Length: 381
Image (cartoon, rainbow, N blue to C red; front, side):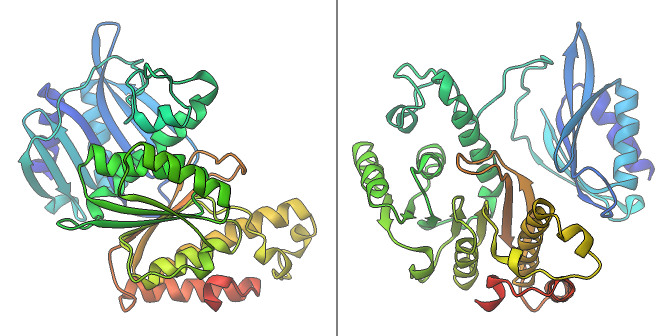
């Protein structure tokens, strides 16, 4: 344990720490999903700010060097199994399933020191004030690059989406053209953003297909893609349930209503898709099915029944994906225009349906399904 304690103390006292991220919870009872620590300058004094990420909120506290070092040691001993630390000299990974036998690996530094100002401007992937062709063409930005005030929420939503895409980017295959399908793309703000990020910012060859049922929307999107010379971006009119393909590296479904989400997910699984990003909405299917004597006094209130069946629907979807070999997270995403729902299912194929983890998820799925006496579309498919 001394080696780990000394290494953490050195990181906080050396003046080269950029950010330290704690992940992989030791137990489900840990309230926060992630903790990160970074240096900040407040009133001329360098402190360390700890950021705690919960399901629906983020909190902060500012600490001295010694307090930050003590917190880091406590977090890795009690709450998390992994640390990723970025310094000016090197990137460090600490794997500590058993803290007394922590495995520490290093590689050359990949990040530079950002501003230490406490109240710094949000560092968006697409910056306000820097012209971006698709945002200008879609009316979110002026020609100068300044975001139009009434569209600032859309601008934030696009950047939040790209932060999630950046998080899953390392899991996408390399050395060939990426094939991505966006089911129910709508006016395609996020589809254009995805193409811009992968093709222009990351210089990846991509083939992205946006699918929607509205003829006028598809015509509108095709014209913009043509004007911008986004040659790897195609828009097709069609139904998710009827779409046929042989393969996709990434499937996105951000506007799929009710069981349309299930059709998108089952297609993705059948194609062995590596990354799935799905924001379900209008989960009505189980509302008329759910039966449970224990919860009946609560289910008689329509609004509570509606909320419960929403969470049940997405919980069952997540377990089905885990049973198919995916690592699943439910994360917060900015609400879409037509719905207040803001839960995204982020699924990454990391295992196989035959694994012990997949079998456990399938058993949990069946127990939950039977407890509420429902038959979800994702199972029938």
